[in-house]
Amino acid sequence: MSELYVSAVLGRPVIDPSGVELGRLTDLGLVPGKTLPVVSGLFIRSGGRRRFVPWRCVNLFTPVIVSADLSGVANDGNVWEDGDEDGIIADIRLRRDILDRQIVDVDGAKVVRVNDLKLHARGAGLFIEAVDVGLCGMARRLGQLRFWTWLARLCGLTLPSREIDWRFVAQLDPNADKLTLTVARERLTDMHPADIAEILAQLPHKEAGTVIGTLDPETVGEALGELDPEVGGRVISQLDSEMASDILEEMEPDEAADLLADLPEAKARELLGLMDAEDAEMVQELLEHEEDTAGGLMNNMFAFVPPAMTAEEALNYIRLVGAEIENVYYVYVIRADETPLGVVTLKRLLLSPPKAPVAEIMTVGLKSVGVEDSPAKVMEIISKYNLLAVPVLEGGHMVGIVPADAVIELFLPESVTRTRFAAH
Image (cartoon, rainbow, N blue to C red; front, side):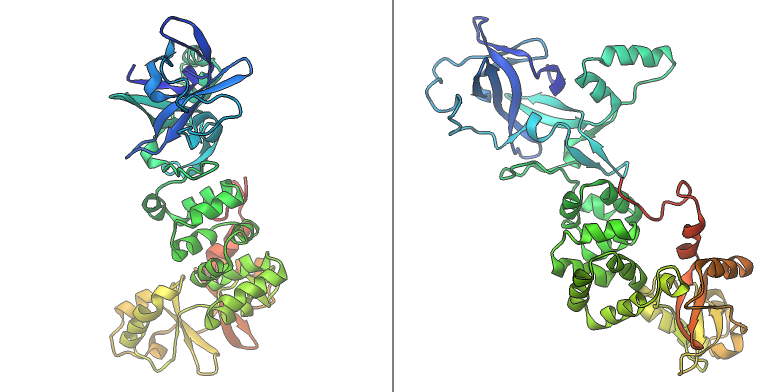
């Protein structure tokens, strides 16, 4: 047969050419191939005796019959008996190290369990072709595939099948004690940060660190910003401190502050000390505010210009600094002493004469909140005036903005919002 599933052969008797049973198949040994893992041999058990049979000795391998010829190889070190594992060409075992392990399903942006594996014969070799993570694989493992298929058809349904090509799932590490399955770096990098966050939230924290290690700090920072701060704190605490500080520098100050607030104080101080001084100062300012206040919700990076600047100069300035600012909904007009005069939208800047001073095109009567105001007060202002962000004042000085999404998610049911992911 050109292809078969592992569940169909595990536990099958392995016989020699004369039909004598050598033992029961308990596992398959694997080694890396050029593109797919290669089966290097069979692990069989007979009573209390265990053997490793190299693949070259296997002359028939089907769901019905598994046959091997051990004549002439019993004493060459390739047949393993109890207490003698020397010479085994199998660093990874299929049943022990892959079945029931969790893997990343990139297309579905979720973590799934390996229920079965599809094998494919090519030439004289046998390869792992795909992992089955669907209900079909689970039913097949339980020996109930026909029953569940019949029951589904009886209800007018089709039993869901989900197989992932091995090349889109993992690479084999021949030196690994336990196989960790992770998606290729370029496929993760192309994903939306919210999808990466959902994957990280489903993985054990140590394995999340493995996935993070394949990504650049900016991508990781965006993904951690989507996580529940408590979960993000546990994830980042598994990382090397230098790597963790690099990631924090790439995050928005408010998101980095939320994450650090959930870490032990000593760990938070350590990471702040490793960060760039300017980034650390901005984060430290936010950590001084209570979590359930406008100051605790705000981001202290926002776009602002002096009143004498022209529309053209303001647009050039935004082009220069805009990449560092997450929310450029509005450009605030602020005096040298940091007291606000008004606000101008990007649309107004684009449509105004290039030489027009922003003081002449801005909107006065700025709607704002204080640093100690509650999230409910912030929500009231945003809803009443249909704002995308609201300025935060302290002592008459503008110290930050609260984006609408930062406060709205606090008032939405968990079933509606998916901007933050908690551990499953």
